[in-house]
Image (cartoon, rainbow over all chains, first blue to last red):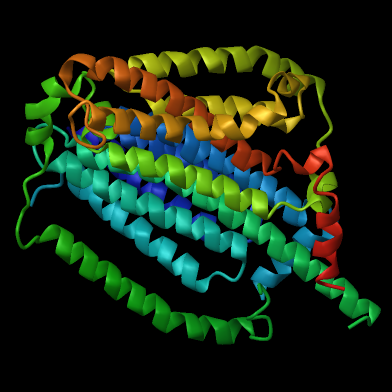
Length: 94
Length: 104
Length: 247
């Protein structure tokens, strides 16, 4: 129980930290990649909560497909122009 | 009250919801706001499933099924929001260009 | 739109953030208090689901809930996916198309040759396994959608296997089959969206197959974002009109 409890606590702390980083990191690309890993860890959490159906769906949809959508949107919005990304960074840093 | 997985995951779900809400309110970029809504949704899902897990010896399948539906719905709403985001950015670019040229 | 707060200095914005942060922390504390000290504990639905599982036709509890006991959830969810595809399609602009034509790489091509058949196989397995284990229409649809995304990534020639005219009927297949099956169940004397024991398993498997196909197609269409008619040429007047709004 103690090892499992420690794993649960570690997983939850990592989830909270990742969520914070997703919203606070300056680079939008970094935020999206962190969001994908957030979804993967979420799938691990579903397994811990005895919901394997949700783990499968989260890994495939919540993390994979949403991540692909975000990355493609990111490329559409800022991908073509190289200094746009720096611009966005300035905007956040202000 | 002892520390049980239900307690840990439930509180994490609440914390994720509030973090997402903070991001929605405080972040300036639209992309970040969409990410924040997704984080909020994850928090709600985690909380629902935790309640289902903690309610007895057997897990309750009804919230799990609802969350499964919710995951798919959140993907489609995210796709719609991202399409809107791209459209907004494109039209803003167009407006910037025409303002620079002095056409407007 | 995104430049609302540009004139503020960081110091200023930090001060403005503080009350919002404090309010959110209060909100979190209230939520945690409500969770830790619940007023009245409500009994879950697990016992009721287990009691009626035998009549549901499938062994998996989640699948039984999704496709039989609370089938209206799944039905409406299919329609929400369709709605999402409609929104994405109506926002599509041909202008943006050039920027997202990726360079087809050899690695991607061989990867999809390897992975797409495997993904279709895994999807079918999940669909079949869903009747008594983890898995089901959503997971299978998600895997199929992932295969579709992989094909869309370098606009693979395999995509031409699917006829363009078949896209919209394919998207509608799941929800329409769902609707017609539930109406047929009504005609057989049951309630709307309610399947009784002997034929339930077969109906549910068929429904799941159609739903998984449509869900996968919807997810791939959400990623692709391109409506099928536009590139056929009958929407050629659309971009100029759109561009005209901002000139």
